[in-house]
Length: 146
Image 1 (cartoon, rainbow, N blue to C red):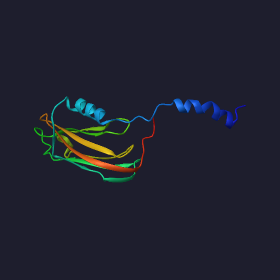
Image 2 (cartoon, one colour):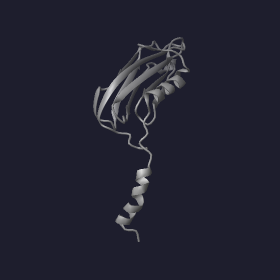
Image 3 (cartoon, one colour):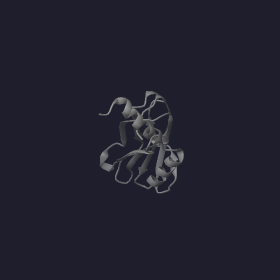
Image 4 (spheres, rainbow, N blue to C red):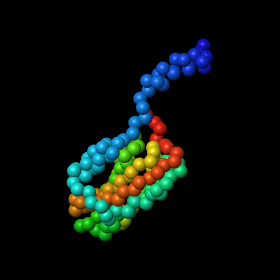
């Protein structure tokens, strides 16, 4: 029969060998962004990201992104992507749109592992990419899975 003390003696060395919590880095975020844009230039403007600059709990953080676009057949948003530099995965989400979408708006909740920069990028039908960024301070971290 396994006692709690014996279980602790067996499990403790394994915990010491467990990998550190994985976090993306600014370089990983830049690589994910290059993959999304195909290396194209990303310009600032036309995108407005709304997120609180100070977050008490990183487990569920409201985030919205809106893109200034007429959403016509000739000029519309194809996708909105969110990137971060410190969560386990640098590419948070990509939402796809068409001219029929009516409005390029993304509203969601995300988890934030720690204080970090976020980047919202919109891919337009003309092949251009536009962005907005935000620095968010998190007082209680989330994303502690390895």
